Length: 245
Ligand code: ADP
Ligand code: MG
Image 1: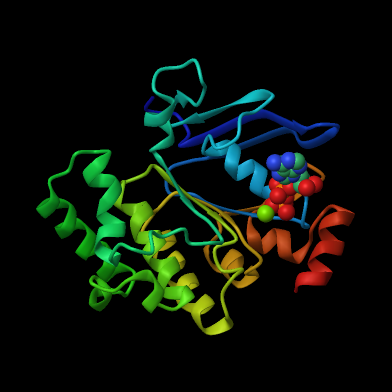
Image 2 (image 1 turned 30 degrees about the horizontal axis):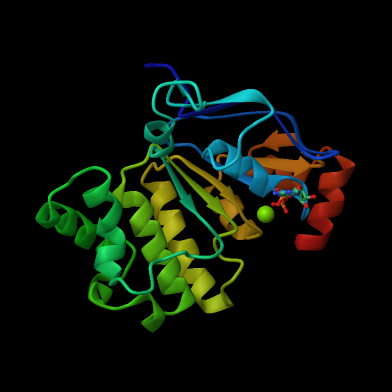
């Protein structure tokens, strides 16, 4: 367990009918590492994230979180899944609950944290995401970027081993995108282990330890951002970058 990667994916393969969406994907994230996953639409990035957090089952291959296998048969699929925080493009907050209740709900119900303790922790997390004054607001009263920052606080409240972000800013306008990217950079600097699917190449350059390029269900290239952006080795990555940069 001591030397285990936080996330270790080996040979991940997933088909939908005739379509092989993930084709023997290997990826490891070590503690404190930030990996940015990029690639064309339909290349399998979201499916990969969904498999890493157990929302989808692999046809072949394995996912381990901090040394524990994410599998139906193993002990406590739910317990292993709880170590993975997931931030989606759509924030999926509970509209009828306050911001504070959205953040404390899972710790209270799932981890049985007493309300006062959960609220103390949540207020600290709201400070961290720049929303200390919004604890009593409803999600509908917030901008998209503020809602996404609540979603980040909610994920952090479960003290996950790793945070997965699947295009967290794709539904946001440029101003609120910037606020969310700022929070993500702060998390990266603080040593949070993160797997981030994003088109924000500025974030990738500044925060990623490695950039992984996915195409046709395979990770075809993995490199530190300086290297990757300066000289991608695959033709597909060069073409992709010429469209996004
Ligand atoms: P990306 O996030 O890189 O855009 P996805 O993982 O969403 O890619 O999708 C990869 C491929 O898998 C696409 O061709 C998509 O249409 C297909 N796909 C994704 N989810 C499903 C599903 N539940 N059923 C059938 N096909 C799917
Ligand atoms: Mg996607």
